[in-house]
Length: 73
Image 1 (tube, one colour):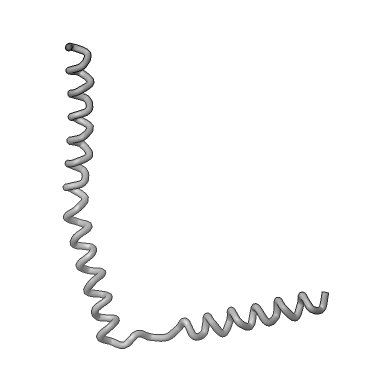
Image 2 (cartoon, rainbow, N blue to C red):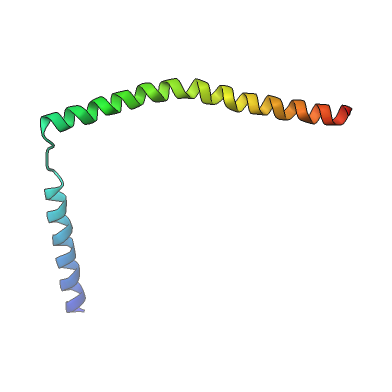
């Protein structure tokens, strides 16, 4: 029981020290580059959604047209 408790205390200490080292701040040029890339990705997403919606609706219309054509023919 004492060994398990010691192991858990050691594990918790490791997690706390890892969390403290995770607070590292990126250099300013790197942070700026990542921010710019995020903004660019947002613009790309804004352009992709209308295209994706048009393609999906187009496939749906083609599928419905084929079903109707198969029933007639």
